[in-house]
Length: 297
Image (cartoon, rainbow, N blue to C red; front, side, top):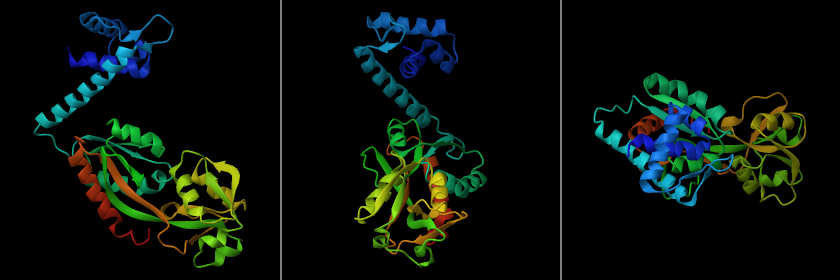
């Protein structure tokens, strides 16, 4: 079978539409349908059930799709291995980052990486951590900036910096004049949180679980920016990473007294990544970028 046949099968399995799959593969729909039908006839199997309006993957089809994905991934690895002249500075690298980090870290690193490696094309993806991890494992993205811990045997990481937490509160709040704030100082405060799915929400809940009398506001923000403006309006307080503690009218940031409260940021990638050489290049550049700032973080 031609490697393209496996690409057609995987495309249909992911898009569940022959027309969309054909456009994705840049061929005509009749050609794609004919090649898949030919595959089914050769092996006397049915991969897709076309009897209803919706495309349904059959039980044996699920197994074939899984093997097809593995074949395509191995084929990609072989191409990389056999192309000895491949330059790690000249490739396309998919880098993912979660929403409460991306807007604050990307402006620091992207221009400098591009300046150092102008032919290294970074494709940036912003998703929540729970969405990023499966894509990393399935090799749909090459690397990601994530908060530790990462518990998956197929992934490894290189630490970048520790991003300590600040308490964000209204500027007129009595605690705003403090040099630092202990968690117990928040015992009677309303703590605002991000919506479900954000790793920062889980981190804040874990830290604030030590504060027995605090209450969590029913309002849940969809972004740090919304959360910041809610605080500025006097609706409550929250924990915000130092890197995201940007100047906002009506908001004051006070460091947590416990300097160990925060999140460890790392560059995460698959152990057998065929882009490892390129990932190493951007990691070394990131380390240099943050070397002079890590004390501030």
